[in-house]
Image (cartoon, rainbow, N blue to C red; front, side):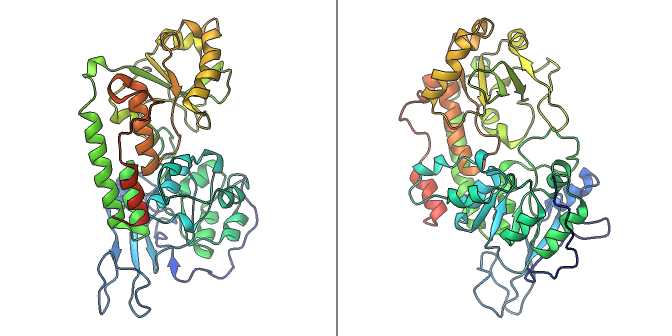
Length: 407
């Protein structure tokens, strides 16, 4: 539901932040096709020349006399121009929120689109890293139906979210997007957690491609590079220890929040969305391959039951929507119910106790490290240790040091 108020005549409140995507074809340049969007998405950060041109990583507040304007390009917005590094910001989903935290910008986050699906407990293991949950839960844009009013109230310098998502999910018009971009602050984001929505006909980005774009917006490229190096080393170290491909399990990834589940929303692991990144990195196959069952999307809300699952009979079942539970709590509720169910109990994964929490729908770079570690231990406990063990696959202190600037 969108707010119907119209304030298009209001004066611009962010004179130092300008929305640079209003070009001939309309506000959301690049949305007309993947080709144009790809060209826009490939553009790198561009900084305006000055009499004393600053280094690319120079702070936008070094001197008031320098022209520190710069632009960053990303589909579907195209080039978005900034005259200063944003300080106040809001993300729609936890993946982009986690990117901001990873870049050391957590203190500037004023709210989020869905606080309940932004899992921050991983920060408890990172010294010096935290977010103010009270602020996020008080300023939950989703609870306000993504109304334009709350965008005005929060008064952010940048909105880290895909404007096409607002149009297709929350009944915003392009005029609504233009109004907030002009009167408050620009939009910058691309819906990347899945790739199954027909309306998303422009370029997608991998997790780290999107992370790099957000780092450019916040002028934190060096911090991004430190994360990229840590991530690449971590993934390589895990993948060198994986069993041969023919010894890896197939996985059924589904969603259902009940402790006594009967039907499930299916996901497809062949979808290249960021919410499945850990499963691709861990080399598992999709149990639904060749079944004709499609993944959850805006237009496909199909459900499957235990009878359908029995036809597939996956090696492992990953169940989303239980991230507030510990591994032990999950086994004592959901898995116990499935073991006592007359049909579910016949599933191989249930018989073998290989039903696990399926990870976050939205994940950023910090969360992905933890979810990949957890997934490795769920899938290959004989190699990486049990998921309930104290074994650690990456250095928490190194992650914390990057976030806090000690790198």
